[in-house]
Length: 80
Image 1 (cartoon, rainbow, N blue to C red):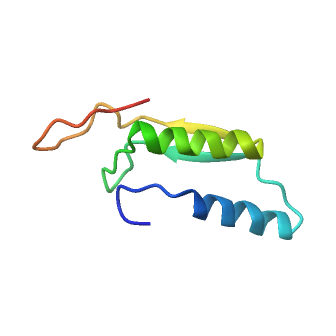
Image 2 (tube, one colour; image 1 turned 45 degrees about the horizontal axis):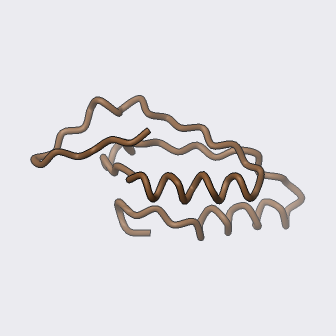
């Protein structure tokens, strides 16, 4: 995926690969904003991840430790 864009395909591929190896993925860790790139996921992207996780019965652990450390020239809305 491009920086700043979150796609469900990699999550689904990893989930299915784990399943094929006899494992069950139970959670994913999402860092928002991302360190070290500073990528901030928007509301639509986060909703997309949550919908996928709900469908698969996977917990989402959201690491937002850098939420107040966003330094951009234009204002960026942080969504939790």
